Image: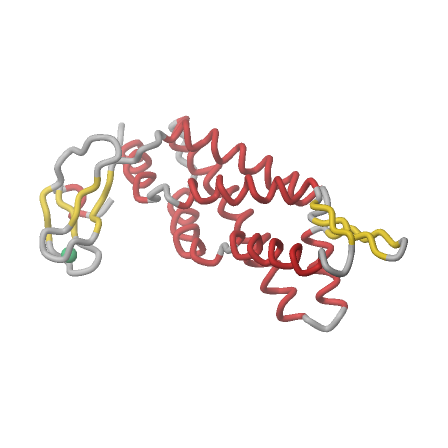
Length: 207
Ligand SMILES: [Zn+2]
């Protein structure tokens, strides 16, 4: 916790104006008096509720990667596509840049986000203070903008519509899991990570 936090102050991340922290009600946010930037907010959801949402999202992630996203039937041939299978196909067909981009933005970063959130929320809930708490929270904050599962979803829906003219396209079980995951991730990404610093820090300095 910085000295500004300890003094009960909040610094604006945009213009550095200092404000005295005031308690907020659930769902309220404090804005900078000078530039209007959000300083801090009282989370709508408690950590234990977030932990349940993150667990549901992890289950959706496993389902989304176990079953095919699409099943294509054309001229008696049946083709099933999973996310990682599509990455491998892209790589094999010389689209290495696209394969790497899809792998990182639609698989690795979202998985990292979910696993990190799970560990951090578990730590906050149980009072467990692992050595990796602060570095993991910083890494999560830095990587957040790179998870783009919703872009993948949009791409899948567009290809579904385009392919339906050429072949018999059946949405696979993973497509529904991906849709659920997209919604859950939107809720998870709206959670302000700054809320995790405070309870963690308080426990760290407690005797
Ligand atoms: Zn400001």
